Length: 271
Image (cartoon, rainbow, N blue to C red; front, side, top):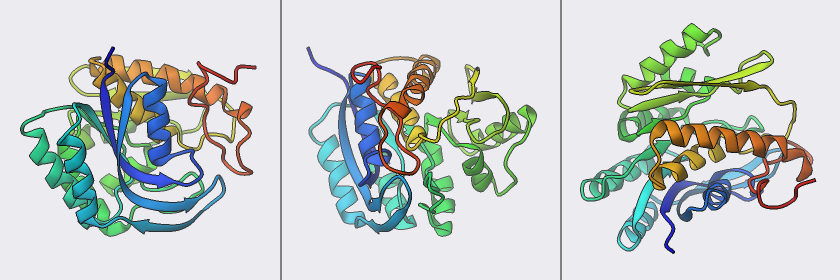
């Protein structure tokens, strides 16, 4: 039996909790084969990002062309993309391949690591907004990322959440999933804005081990889309799975800082 293939375009996390590593784990947990294009290499762990080195645009382009030239890619997830040159390269190569192989794209506008370290230079924000958002089937910003993309203050009310989501959608994304993890309160609400809107609310889980939640959620959505699910189905299923991964995160006990979620909580390590 063949499995659907999803491609992640993102940076490498040497600690294994976010980035390419989290994306591939998420794909696998959702029974989807994962291919990868590495845009940057980070030296990081659960406490800090010690160094970041970008992969050359030419190498990024070569990786994208190699994957699309041989694999039957059914969905693409874009995460950490580095500087404007790499963003432009990713956009150009995807535009070329999607003309002949139109597949859904999930864009997670990664800007800051869980440790607080910046992962996207200021000069790259405009390039991401202008070149990548129009390619997105689903854009998945958290509150600080949405605010930075729109150059405004983070949303504090449900009304502001919806307004910012609509403003981001106006930039070209088909759907925008406004994630409420950075908000306050006992309930965490994610708002999907688009042709078929959706509201997902759950009790906020108390744990410091949430490293890689954004990468993992966006990758799980891409995996669902690669499997033929609708956007609302993929978002709903990914949301449910991530809640389980967060609930089981403390079982892993990885690192001394913000540990990763448990991607394989449905398969191993159950207490």
